[in-house]
Length: 310
Image (tube, rainbow, N blue to C red; front, side):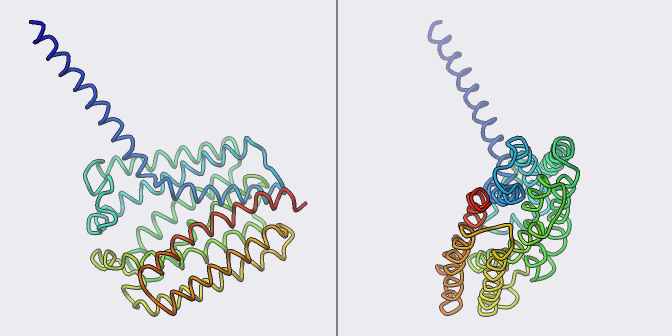
């Protein structure tokens, strides 16, 4: 009798552990839908925009609300992206294990989750910050899911060039949250990210071009070849660094930003030149990884620069 009772208790405990593990796994899958690393980078750019707009440290309340609203909006856009890209994700080794193509989350559930997050983002920003920041965040989502994911990505090798506009909006959101307007420095920040996006994603596409080819996605290396892609990466890298240095002539930034932009930009161009002269996957990976660090550091230095510049 005692053995039977113990056995029953053990089975019940095992069921509870399994249920708990299942809930945790499902929670993690929904978090995966939002693509946290991308959200982190977008929030850094938004925070940089807020610090520059405030010419110092912005209100902690505004800072928190923009981060919450921005995270909800970006996470929602990424979740909808999982829904729209479920067919090609199932064909690429890099994405086949994502929650939707692996059938861990139903496609419709991912869509509803994404829409709900965006609704939450709009409410948070419109009610507690201002309408312009809410509209900009919603515009970024609509551009990303409808224009880039739904149209450009599958139809033109210029998908990243045009589609990069979606990821360039967060610093404008940060600026607008503080000032209530869109001014020239905010446009500069938008343009910097707009020109950063092609070399960043083309470096990635060089690494996984076989995946894109298998899925029928016309990324530049698939359509135009590796040589043409590395040439374009170098040209856009020059334009990017030029823009970051040109920005230093405005009153929005100072010497901390200028020194950082020059140093980071010089190494960015070096890696792009190295890739152009000697194409291989390793050099493409170095540029791709540094491009992530580059953008994060470029906007991170805007924080101390805005504090000590004025």
